[in-house]
Image 1 (cartoon, chains in turn brown, red):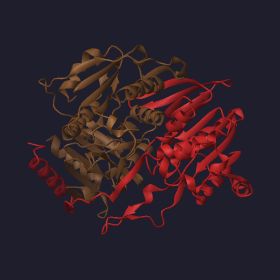
Image 2: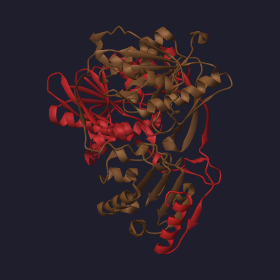
Image 3: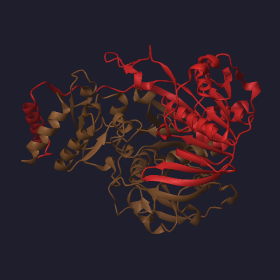
Image 4: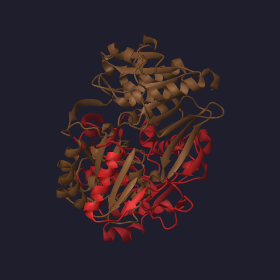
Length: 330
Length: 261
C-alpha cells in the first residue's frame, strides 16, 4: 500500500427515509476543519434512492464534492448493499480517511467495511486532530469512559473512525460555497444480499432526540420510582425541557433507552443539565460533562457528580424538584 | 441446530474508580466478569437449546484466567467450550482479534454464530461484524430477539434509534446481541460442580486456519498513540442548605445564566 496514493476526507452521509441525519452534518463540519488544516478536500458519500435533490445542501455544509449513489437497492439500509457501495468507492477513489456516524447504522456498516478493505477503524471518537505526520489522531473513551485513548492507523488507508451524534459541531450552511455533485454508479453483487428487510417499525417514543434538547432534566436512583419521574416530567414541562435518565433508571424500566445519557446511551451537551439523584458514575459523566451548565442535586455530599457540577446541592432531589416546579410555575 | 457463542472476559468497568489525587485508574480489586452483551447472547443460545434442542459451543480468546467464564458457561448449560490462547494473538486490535476468532470458527460447523454487540472494556461493537465479513456470512447487529422456523430461516428483531426492524436471514449467519434482549439464567448448583469436571479445549495458532500475518500486534492496523485519564474539571459551588434556600440558589443561577428572565 502506497500511502501517497490516498487523498481526501470522505464522510458517510447517513439519511433515513431521505432525511439527512444531523450527525452527518456534524461530521462534515469536522471534516471541513481537518481538510483546511491538511490542505485537502471533503467528499460527501450520499447513498440512498431518490435523494439527489438534497446533494447541493451538503456543499453548503462543507463538502467540496458530493458523490451521489442513487439506487433502489439502497432505499433502506441493510448491511451488504451499503458495504458494497462504500467499498467500491474506496477501491476507486482511495480515500485518506473516512468518517461515519456512530449510530446503530454506522456501527453496523463501519466494521463490515473496515474488515472488507482490511483497515483500522476507531469507534466512537470524541475528538479528531491532525498529528505531526499529517495522520489523524482519534481520541475515544475506553474502559467504560475511565480512560481516554488516542488511536492512530499508521500503515493502512483509509483511516476510519465513527463519531457519536452530538459530539462534533456542524458548520452553519454557507450558500456561497461551491462544489461539485457527481453521480456514481455501483455494480452490485446481488448474490450476496442475504438479509431481507421485512419492515421498519417506529415505536411511540415521541421521536424525541435528547441530543437536540436545550435543557435536560435527568434523573437517577435518587428519584426512586414512577412518581419521581412524574415530578421530573412536571419540572421539564415548566422549563420546556426534555426528561432523560441514567442507565439504572432505564434498566429498571422507568424510562426508554432512547432517553439514556452516558457511555452506553447518548452523549448530550445541552445549555443546562439537571442531574437529580444521579451519583455520577464515570459512564454517565462521559455522556454529559460537556454540558454548558450542570446543576446536580444529591443526598450524598461525596457523590462524584459534584466533581463535574457547576452548582451542587446536597439534599433530597424529590423535594427540590417539587419546590422548584412550584416556584417556577408562579 | 448448531450454535457457537463468542464470549469475552472483561473487567467490570462499573467497579473501576479513578484516584482523585493522581487521576489514574484504580484497577486493584476490580472483578472480572463475562461481558454482559455476550452473556445475553449465550442465554439466547441456551433458550434455543431448551426449545429446539440445539448444540451450543462457547469460544473465548484471552489469557489463561479466561478459563473461568468458560466454566461459568458450562454451569449455565453449554455443551462444549473452547479456549483460544496463544502468544501470537497478543496485542491484537479488533481486526486482528476478529481474524483469530474467524480462524477458529472455520474449524467449527455451525448454523448460527452469536456474539455480544460490544464488550464493556472497549465498547467498539466491531468484532462481531468483522468475523462475519471474514467468514463471508450475513450479519444482523443490535439483536433484541430471534425466532427460528425449525428449518432454515431466522426472523430477527434489530434495535434501531427510532424503534426496530424485522429482518429475515437464512442459516448460517452471524448476530450480535444486546444485553437488554433477555435476563441470563444463573448457573445451576449441579452445573457448577460439573463445570470443573468438563473439558475445556485449548486451541492455539496451530489448531486454527488463519494467515499469521493477520494476527496479534503485527496484524493490527490501529495502535494506541497515547492513553490518559480524563482531566478533572475544577469543582463548582456546593451547598448543603434547606430546600427553600437551595431552590432559591438554583433560580438565582438560572437567572445569572439567562435561562430564566
